[in-house]
Length: 109
Figure 1 (cartoon, helix red, strand yellow):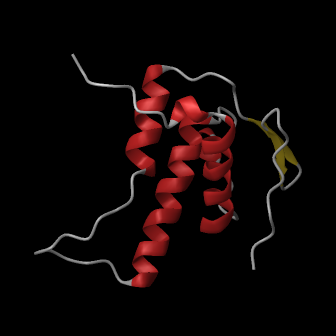
Figure 2 (tube, helix red, strand yellow):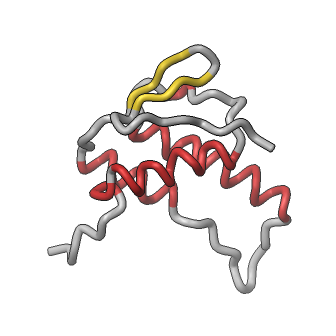
């Protein structure tokens, strides 16, 4: 079982001795990038489906990249040691504490 990540109400957490801070506001570009990466990976009805192991690897990669879109310190250096579950816990925190990140922006004009 993966070690839980504690994220304070202010969005501050520590991994492997490094401190990270989740901002309170995000640019439109960060939001769009985040949303596109956090969207579930669908299986194609007539194409290749992902095996369970492939799905875990793919989702872990996408969750890490999505976190890097909104956590400046992650950048290209999001810790490789984070499990899919740990990364998902970050995204769950974002959904609870930064709801504007996941809110529907409404119709495009």
